Image (tube, rainbow, N blue to C red; front, side, top):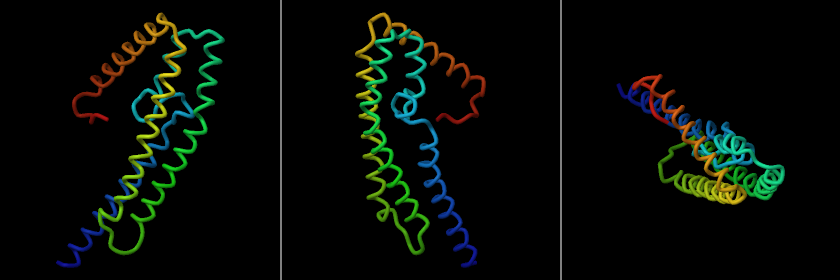
Length: 167
């Protein structure tokens, strides 16, 4: 009976560890701001290029947007590199031998949260700079396209039915 309880406890701990390890890895598989042109994790990263394409940027505006992205690319690379290192450090602790408690991982969790916050702030700076390049008409067109995309997304969710979990 004790053997079975320990086995269940160890198995449960391993499953939790794998889930914790897999989530950061999954987040890294999504295109980041340095690859797609927006903030990671909020949907803006994927939507921004589509919205900009729909806003019919002039050649000058396209060049300005590319320059904005180039200016921020080193910061994104550095932050993503730090985030990967912190996630790897946490994964190493999760899969190390010996007892492990929540407090043992607190520094890595805090560092990961801080880096994600810095990424969001940097992404916001990029989006605000790009927004400053657009004319009022282009902003209105982008807003209209975003509304249409949200409507399509809502329709797709409703097609899957209520059993599909929200993200």
